[in-house]
Image (tube, rainbow over the protein chains, first blue to last red):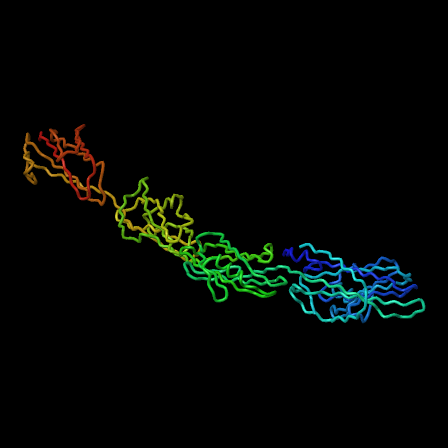
Length: 129
Length: 407
């Protein structure tokens, strides 16, 4: 299927199949350093997180994911399946991710910035609530 | 379509989000849907004091994406001929917004079907242009469907002749979005064949003696579509030998591509064996449909073997050629007229008829003559030889006079 150029070029418009890159930037507004800076970004309904796309511009960042609306977090969420009558755990597919969380482990100086980003896809056969 | 990458920057502010765990599958995210992403950041100061988290939101809007799915039967088998048959096509809008349809059509083999109209909802449109005009005013919602029926007639004599009708749909909002559905239309074939004639010819033939005979049958395709036919010549009796069928040596052959209703002449070459006059036999040609081996028909020609036969009589007359001597006597010096008569007693004309007559030693040959023109008569070594030119018809008689003198 082709795109409708009129819509395609419209700012802020996306089409099924498109990948959206969300970039989150936080600036420390305080006069002193802060710590335990933590971004939390729910994956918008109808979008699928793109595996491996979460990143940050610092090295001291721990990235975790939730598949239960933020109730639990893990760098690699697991799901349990029953195979031949026995429960088997395997990595959850990225499309199941509901939230992404970036935790900065060090200090953020006054007026300093930290940037995190992720990518999400608008599926051709999208899921919506 | 190549996925696009959109960079969305969130400034960061506050907000709490709650996402639902369940999800329902939809074909496409609808055009115009606003997708909101809200991110939150939290932090503490050097003394571990927490502050109100801040969040930022950004919206993106889902644009229109065309999608067409045309479905229909892969194949149909209407009768031939038949009027007002229909092909049903279902258009589903699998794009993510309202759209309308434009269609084109293609028929792979001409002459099999004729499209007479198009029906949408309860209205029939006579031409494709009229249909498209109507379609331009029918907005189909996302995931919605529209039934299009193509009305067509099947021509006569097209049984088994396949044609492919292809309907291609285009999005009116995005002309490059398209889908096609092809339906193979193969009218049902009812095979039929008639071979004529069917006896009654009363053919009469001499034994071949190297000369073959030819009989021509007519093989007519009595089915409703083109067909091929296997031909087999046979005979129930003992007088016939099959030489060739339709130019092919042996007793079988195949004719191909005989149109419905068409007739093709088939020559059967045969010989008549050296059997007795009056022997009867029947030349049979059987044609079997290749499309339906259960359909066949036979034509036949009956014949009788004929042969020539000759009988000869000889009567002695006085010299006046009128008074039969019979049991009477003759005297030396008297002339005798012998009348030698040959009769064709067979069932076929005789040719090369020759009469030979040895003159008795007690008489002297004087002369010989025929009853009419046609005889060539000679005398040599005491024997009269008379050759009859032309043929001697069945039951016909000819004679010669031989005049001798008693020694």
